[in-house]
Structure formats: C-alpha cells, structure tokens
Image 1 (cartoon, rainbow, N blue to C red):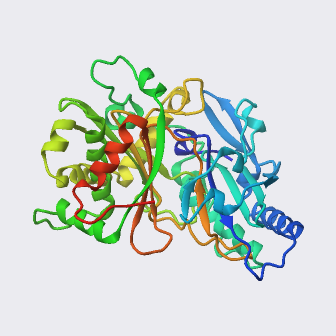
Image 2 (cartoon, helix red, strand yellow):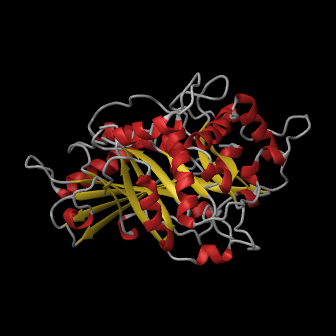
Image 3 (tube, rainbow, N blue to C red):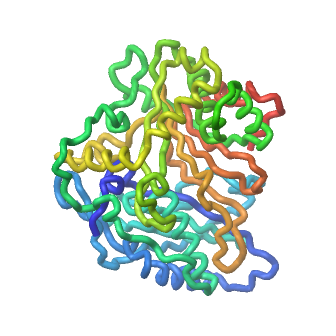
Length: 433
C-alpha cells in the first residue's frame, strides 16, 4: 500500500494512550474471558483495518510503503501490584509510567516493528488498563480513536458502525510529481528550522534542560471570559475557543520563559485537512490527514498587543490551509529527492518545539471518551510520558461540562510561572488537577 507524503513525514513513531476500567459489582468475566474478548475482537477489527496488521518498508530516498502482509498486531499481558487509585486518583486524565504501555523497539529494522500494539495490565484491585500504541505513519489521531471505537463495538458483539476509507490516492499516494514547477519551501515554514533563542547557535543546550509536566483545567466560564478578551473589537466572526486558547497559551509561554521582546517565536499547530480538501474526505479516512502549520511573531508584539492579536495570527495560519495549499504541500514533498530530513525517527531525534517555541495539538473535536469493550466505559484515561519541552495537548473534559484540559510539558524552571500567567487574566479562582 502506497503511503501519502503526509503519512511519511513528521511523526513516524507511535502515539500512546491508556484507558482504565474499574471492576463493577456486576463484572462477572474471568480474567481469561477479558483477554479472549479483546484478542478475538482485535483480530476481527484488523480485517477491515488491515494496514495496521502490516509492516512498514523502506523503498529508497527516505520513502516508505506498507507491506499488507497480515503479520498482525502485538498483544501483551501484564500484571501490576498497584491499584487504580494509586495511579489515577480522582482525576480522569493523568500521566502514566511507561511500563503500562506496550514498548516499541525502534532499534529493530522498520519492517519488524508492529504498527499497532496493545498491553492489557491487570491491577491488584481487579481493575484493568488497556494501553495502546499506534504508528502515526499509518493513521493520525482522528483515525486512531475511530479504530478504537470500532474495535470496542466488535468486542461488545456489535457490527462495525462504518468501514474505513483506505484509498490514499486522494492524496496522490505513490504517484510521481505533477509536471508543474514545484512550490517554494518559503511557503511552508514548517519544513524549515524553527527560531532559536537569541545568541544561541542551536538548540542543543535547551534540549538538555530538565522538564516537567502538568495538566491544567480551564472551565467553560473562564474560556468565555478569555474569548471576550480576544473579541474586544467588532468583527464579522469572533475568534473561536481554539484560536483564543492557542493565542493565550502562546503569550503565556513567552511570559513564563522571560523572552526578550526582540525574540522571534513560533507556534506550531496541527491542522486536519479532511474537511479542507475538495472533495472533502469522509470522517472514516484511515490515514494521516494532519500536518503542522507555523505561526510566527516577535515576542514584543505578542505581549504588548491584546490577546486578539495572537488569536488573529492563529486564524491567519488556519485560513491559509485551503485545498490548493494542501495539494501544493504534497507536490513540494514529492519533489524532494529524499524525505529523511522531514522525519522524526532518525539519529538527530524528533524536532524540538521547545524554548522559544510551542507546539499545540488539539483533540478537542475527537471522540476520545466512552470506549466500552463490554464492561462499561473507562473511568480514567492516561497519557504517555514521552514528551519534551514545548509539547502541549488540548483535550475536552470527561465531564462534558465545556471545560478544556491542557496537557503541557515545559522546562522545570518555567512551569510555575506558566501556571501563574495562564490564569492571571481570568477573574475566577483557578482550578488545577
């Protein structure tokens, strides 16, 4: 199966999540029955979603394809001496240790690395955790959660809700470049180097600094207050909560890091092109349809001007992602002799989104909750810990009360200041998780 240029660039490693289930009083299934249910339903799910059962293969010039050879997914069983309360506490969302997730050995030849891995962990309280690792080269976040939802339906004895759309030719996967002049890299700054701290020749020192993680909550009323601040001038269409929160986080990071006003800073946001290309892709498109877009400014402008300025920069970047922009970006990559420098699995490591920059990934519109495999919906969700300075993730609240959860990794010396500034302009009492 040919892969599109979006599949083959950016994050080619695995994305991890875990879902925790506490045994209800009516949980009568023996542990072996739970294992059998998950294995059988996963085997059935991998028939229509067969790319996940294959393996990647290099075909030269930093390019990949999927060998649909049905080698299969990896299923791991584990036991843990801790209880769910020890790990998750009262919070729905939490960071979890790496041993609760299936491990991926990237030192192996790529054709030996599973594309989908599951670890079923049984805790001393009787609860279970279903840890998942899926290859971003095969599917993006929207596709991954769609697969988990369909797998859960099969585990409950129900049929697929919707079959996957596997035709990557919509992105001209495997086809040669068009016989037209290639686009310029200047129009796609996401493929160029990000800004460095003033007076630093590279980001090697920033990469070494110790980081910490936090999950912050912004309530619906706090979000409404922020939007009022951003929409302080009359306009035909007010800034969305996404544009507003991105602008607010960008400004907050600049304040927390104490950046000089002449410092250039980039905000990296991830755009889903499913609804932006023509004809539109179905929601069941099973591949990578997301890519990075860069917003850039000088710190002095970001902090001296109101929140609406930062939100407007985010909107400008989003609005330039048209059908023409997406397809032109594909042609840009097709015209590259080698895609290696656009991939994150090589010896130089993943791209660094940290100081003075920030990356925001949004799962706000994705169905990330409510995966019932036959014993009720999950009680907690956990995130993997393999994040670095500048990585952040927006998630909807499990309570469906309109609040937003912000998962963030920053250098230790900046986190306290970030929390302070994050709530500084909001008039209500802060609420931490």
